[in-house]
Length: 479
Image 1: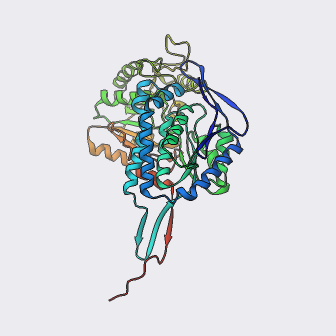
Image 2 (image 1 turned 30 degrees about the vertical axis):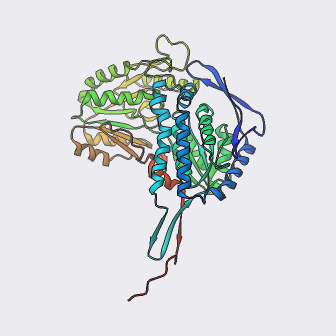
Image 3 (image 1 turned 180 degrees about the horizontal axis):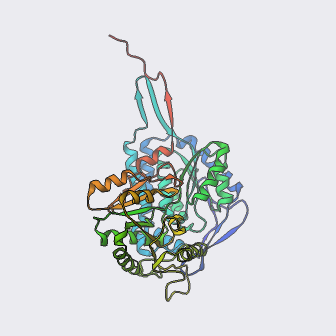
């Protein structure tokens, strides 16, 4: 069993101000996998003060020094890659293959991307006699979720380190193991004391203390829209920058000339991956109404090909993260049945043969109406809602008929038609015909999906302030 009861503050592992622990549950077994300490306002204050002190020197480091730090972290991460993947499987149930190929891989991917961007990033620009300088914003508070745990840590920490900021991380208390290993990696890499700090705890205590702390200059939060609103409220009195990546209910518009087996099957697979626990999952599939029966057949076969079971086995899907999430998903599946959607496959209860663990049946609903609960609420589980449309304009209207705007997906045979649909969708990232992920592409949402952008060079801007120095260069006398 893992014992992670110390915090990492000012370059050292320290005891919490007051002893209070929490058991971490393995969602595949429902058994205790480890224990962490739960922090307090005093722990947060100690960590923030360490970060503030370190900012005085770290903010003045050179580009080359910060590149060297990132490269050392990458080298240490490679040494701990297997440990990271195993921790993710244990803490949140990602199948071993997914933890290896995607979950752990995203962590090192963001580090490598930040190092590459830093090599050529322009921190200074002259406009006439004015010099415009981009400087590190200061002490950053990071509050990260459990669904892609190290991905969400890395896509904040890497650009913050690259731009000269210092930081305090509060990872999810539900899935804290990967954050512990991440911290051990940074310590081994020789990140200067106080630059990176770790305090475990819950949102109402540690999260609120971080987002309201007067010496924190910006807070970056990834999680539910409900919690994001609370973070913004807590941050408002100190007028700090607030960056949020929140919920989603992404449309997946399949045009009539698309390759239906590929588009429908791929859409189902995208939702089932990570047991539906991805904020950008294409959970609303919009298809031509006259082809609904064809779509149902493809979707049913695709969903039923996703075996569910022990994440250390050869299954495509593991459990969802917790009993709370399992119960919420079950309630929304039942809501879909009660409101009259056609249950194509799946449904309530655990998959056959599984009587322990937070496992959910891969579930597909068809003939869903846009006013049904399962078409509106973020389920955050392996559940797809299929809606029919008569015209492309109707599909676009329904696609945009959501409070969220994180992602959208379009499939079709005519590239120009696909691009025209993309131009009309209100979403921060639009995927055309199953395009591969791009770590340089900005990631973030419109509307209730948040504000600001992560990933690649766009992430750097979140951690920089802009200073204009007038009269920096003397005027050249006219000849």
